[in-house]
Amino acid sequence: MTFKRRGGRKEIIVPQEYAGNTPTKPQSQDAMVVAIVRGHIWRDLLESGKVKTIAEIARANKVDGSYVSRMIDLTLLAPDIIEAILDGHEPPGISLARLTGMRIPPTWDEQPRALVLAPTA
Image (cartoon, rainbow, N blue to C red; front, side, top):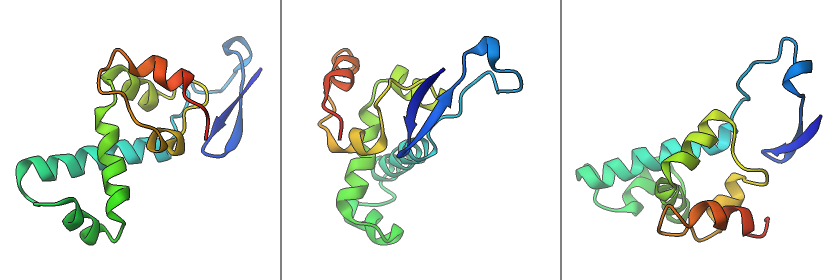
């Protein structure tokens, strides 16, 4: 049995041989999934020209512009990292606060190492 932090709380991860009725695929962190989806939607709005600025998205969603920027930055994550988050297999210690509080490396090759070595928030 191991423990994993999920959204500020601890979750017990039971080995598969003892899992019984446990789903075969762990649940992903809902907050991270929602943030990644928002980031992609908002980036698409900007790229399509439906909105002109981040401030416009922020006003429409009643959030701060820096929040919108941080969510859009999540779209820079490598596809394999996003897939791991969506599947619930993100690296230990990865949280939304940590992802939005760090500078995401621009190349996908650098990202896995940066996520593991970055200090936790």
